[in-house]
Image (cartoon, helix red, strand yellow):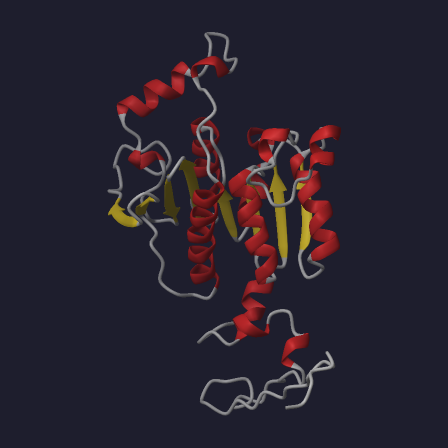
Length: 280
């Protein structure tokens, strides 16, 4: 038996099946291990160029936003704008892959930290940090995006993203609480997030604000959060995005509920509301 001295192995990939790079005259890397995206390129009907052309907007750079950004960077998405006005705190560190204790100590802005780390580790993606509230974004920011990710814990902000994006870019909206998570995909002319709003939802939305429009945080305590649930929901969000980018059928107009205790995932149709203020 020969001893492995740690010398890198050159492995030529010979691909001849119909539709493969070799069969269509494309270029195949001589060393498959030198191509960061080689393994995902092996997926049937994969189009790395289509992924690279995506201009994605990620709203919220907390736990869910961290996971979504990580997956988008690993895929090789061309451009990502990360929007969040908040700073890193110690309580973020158990479920946010980009943040460090030093970031919390310095109260670094979440979007800035993700953009800085991405420039160091994911050179294929151009990342922009936007440290504003989502309500302060110009309309053209939504209109030029090819996809929008909602990674928010605020219903009012979620509805704003829904309204601004509808008819311009699909929205992949996620949310978690403890062992439970949800995903909703909105792509016109499908139903939207507001279509699923009940009277109770509107009541809770208005109770969040005082009579002068100031947010009342005391009645909206921090939700329980697990890194495991966050990872699952972010994966569901990005998986739907991949299908969209590759031109494959998705689940627009549906609401997916994930139960981490039973490992059951259920998808429900969201009827399009005729009186919806977004598109009714």
